[in-house]
Image (tube, rainbow, N blue to C red; front, side, top):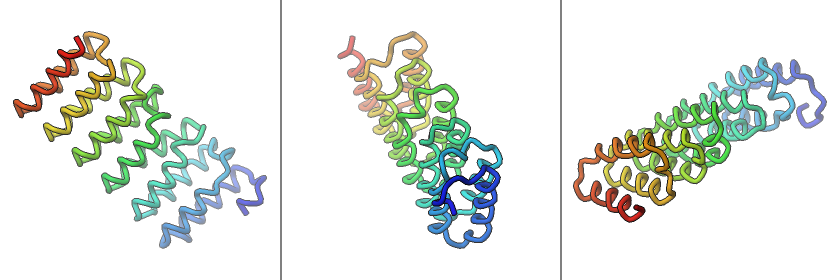
Length: 209
């Protein structure tokens, strides 16, 4: 029915709601239906709620990530925000991190989407995965607010080595352009307990002076 095209928003909503009920036991089949939703109907608030409800029925993090990624990268801002909020429910740090790395070019530089991106990143428990997400976000942190979000989130990393790598990349990308960014950077750097890693970060700063 979806392949035929020309369906109304109401029809799309009904299809998704029924798929969420009848295919709840098969994440793969439910994912396949959601993936076929025409982009044009994603602007509907009711269809959006139906998709959100269907995603919540999925138990497989891999299938959930696949669907969320598709909607996060759509042209519809509201649907993208909904998808990013649902991404917080992905229990696998690896799946969540891979999703965030993929959508970083769309989310990091955009006000509104940026806040949702970093709020989701903050739910990652693995230091390595969170550091990987922040390093993927750095090339797209073109505004002061984006750079500030990267630096502030880095403070959450408990591994001194992973935190140092992120902060050194911040320095290498010449992101410390304002006093606010430099202050936030030093605040995160001072949370490094390893003298060796702290020294590495300071040396990176001095080399760029």
